Image (cartoon, rainbow, N blue to C red; front, top):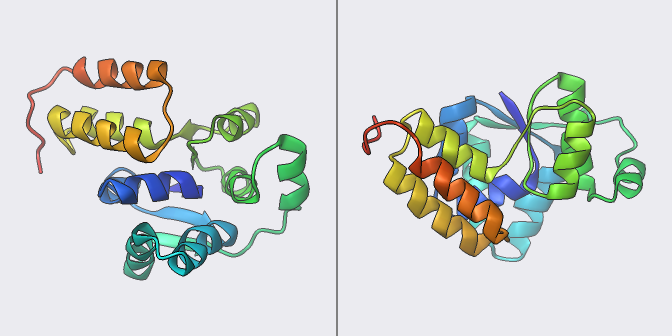
Length: 174
């Protein structure tokens, strides 16, 4: 089980790899703020990823948590992150779960609170390592990810090397 911010959901849906979250974590919990941002606003804007994420919400492995009582806006402003990120971080902290975030400032804030932090790239690497996807598919997904989210050259190259350096046959078990 893991808590997610909007970024990884959107990015992985856009490259048709949202299912990897189910494979790795079983259940993904999102605060209401993330659902409003990803699904409601996304659908209003006609974003295909919003509809894909909504289907998985209906399938039940992505779950909305409406219990956020924290002063998310104040936390977001003081940390310099958006409210969805702050809500996800506070939910993860309250539930003592890791959190999925791609934004660097939000990742640093979450890590500073002692949370285990992962992102879209980490999901690809971990899935390749666990043979959920082949190294070749992970490298293809990384290239697609670089087209739907901003990645520095260093981050991209480090991720590519991490995937290429995995020690297993080039076949996924699925």
